[in-house]
Length: 129
Image (spheres, rainbow, N blue to C red):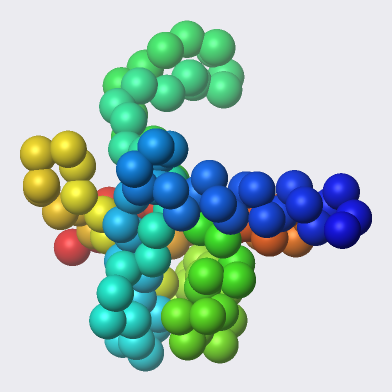
């Protein structure tokens, strides 16, 4: 097995490990409303401090992302990868996950960054109602 294949396999194992790593249920919904019956397992974050790129200073803000394995997305039945939908008349890709207290937060995808070397995608999120 090539090193690249091995790295992708290890990354998928770590990403999907709910018991010993940071795997966390993530609900992905496409613009047509499709969402698999079971949530995907990935890594998520929702933090309140970010660095202002103009000043380099810490400021209050909201930075939410999710990291998922591309193969898991395809295996779940999605025909494409999540991406930003700039047209506000079209439903966006949605991502939802719970915090540690069980509160569910729903976000829309505003940017997606696939890493086809490790078969991973990181989606940048913004609050959605």
